Length: 556
Ligand code: ISL
Ligand code: CA
Image 1 (cartoon, protein in one colour):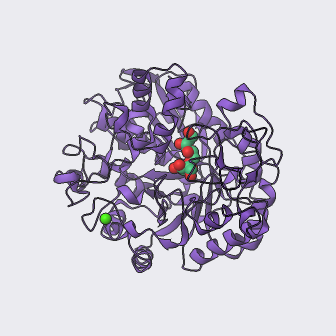
Image 2: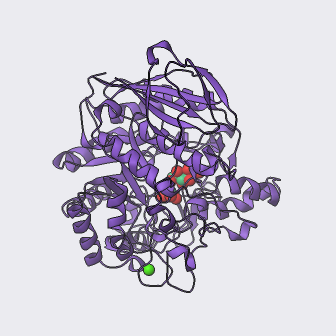
Image 3: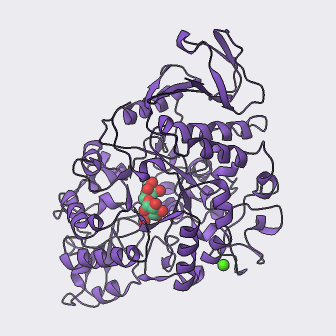
């Protein structure tokens, strides 16, 4: 076992809450902080260690809170600062840490800084944002927004354009301006001094911009994030953020490294000179994705990505996630929606997520096997990204049917349908007339209440795995080896600790597959399985592994 240096943020399991869709406490159909407070016992029961809270700050919700209007204020829909303080205190009492979402690549256009900045070219806040003169009546450069259209918006008052990588209502902050950086550091200290345990940093690799804004070629236009995430001063800004803020606290930081090159991610998280503890790389969670399209992928491709990330040296630590608020539900993408296998495949994914090497990030509803919704018309989507890109995608010749079909595989909205608590109205998410966004139609079948006390439920499976994993250094820090990287259906790997080896066997197919058990595991003891009876009999050397069968063996 490599001599990895032990850290709490390597060992503990994170649970992401998207507050708008988690639990509504006051019947207005919108999730809120008091709703989270009412579910802290549930989180304790599940056995997670850290909550990552998606943005809770004051926002006009152009992008559901990823457009912040006041970094020091709780969004009125979500409650008050007193509610926040009570939630933080209760989480701490339950030995659950809290990390916040730091969204500082951009703010809302309703932030007072931007309101001032757009007033005139000589306003003291002008340089808080990225303003450029046009090019003979055209935008300063051909840079595109991720949410459709150009990344430059003309402001009639001054005749200049401002940069927005995301929606028009999300103007990019100008990190070249030391005052902006200083304000960001003050924001970070304000929340850290409250006792928050760290940050998930939204698109943090985009904050440095090439000040020449060079024209992008055809390929770059299709994947602008690779250009936007290699700005010349990124490392310098993160270094300064560390010196000014993070080095003064015992906190966990995870950067959303959207589009970043591997070597830059490697450099930023290298423990010998670390700027951010962890990064979210999207190769695994978004395998087969080509923007809004979800293309086919195969298991050897997925296993190769794990091998690549697991073969890093002892100075780098991966994150493991198959879901978040920007991606579809893992059961629908990586598991099976066949009624015969849906639950079993959800449990298989639980084993994969909680036995791989790295810090696991669960997303609300994953622990009960929530699935994608079925959207029957494009008008049913809420997501600013899906809607924003619609016109230009249809104008490019893609039919509405095709776009709808792909969105039903890839849309962010699949993970924004409210958490399903029980089989009453709105799935128990809200007592109100209706919730802010539709509840998945399968809530009567998939909900917390009918799983909490069912020892065969997905919830109970996650709970037992979390208990098994807690402080299990052989599993957490054990060396990783893939035993059949080329197999199309089986994902079988070991985790070898100082005094124990775990053999993890996953059949990610609808087929029954045979596999020759290596001699070294001649008497494996199955300790956790998603089938009642094990498929291993003592002394048997060839296993018949059933569809979506998953189990963990111990080999002392
Ligand atoms: O992956 C994506 C590119 O299509 C997008 O889903 C996503 O916008 C990107 O990963 C960046 O995500 C983060 O920043 C966005 C916000 O909309 C996302 O919710 C957030 O996770 C802008 O703040
Ligand atoms: Ca509410």
